[in-house]
Length: 300
Image (cartoon, rainbow, N blue to C red):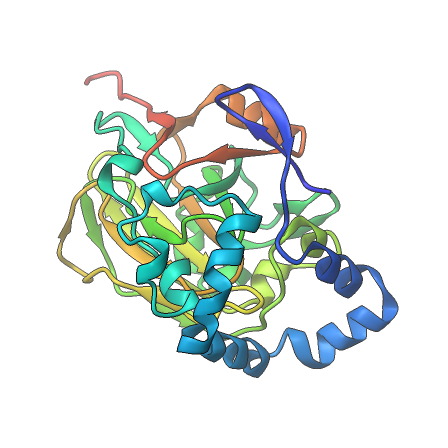
């Protein structure tokens, strides 16, 4: 059971997990764990399933998925009948009015839809995965020079479950460098898996880039793949001017994670998100929603 905090209602809710029984069996039973290591975490397993989700044969899954998880299709640019495959539906674009962007230059916004954890004053060698499990930023991106820049800064972990909008966006005006790709496994990023697999983010396929933002300093963007995520697609153009809310990329089918690292003394994360994170609860957020604000220098 995954419980998260709804910022709007100020209540805790239970997440309806796609493939919940499969996840529990895979990550909680000896046979499931053997099957995971031998097959499920491998690239070819996710690639095969991803190919099916790209095919026209998969389109029959769209209507049942919408019904089972109560997906609000009034937000989608396309109707349910217009999708040509399940991945076409899964990576759907939304109408602009469905995700209004907080345009205040001092507002830090969420890069996507999902469940958010936020940590301040971070120790780069003891980043929190879940209670009892930590990992290092240097190992996550395989670059100690870049990681040192974010010492004592902020770490934001945005988990996208399969029912979420799966495009991720830039949180400010600025310029983004080229994406660095790191090969890896395809473990689930669901809390059930995070509680069982040490250094899971450091084991999975991931991509990272440095975004030079106008208002919040340098930001490290990391996208982490997961089981059945056929691809991480970067749609932005490196080294060109970017506007707040512009699309950075998207994940194909499966739950996934976007991780952001911000420099020290640049941003103050909203109090409710920090409080819930300290209790071990994720906060439900939408792309464009304010999640923090700029720390203004004394001379501003």
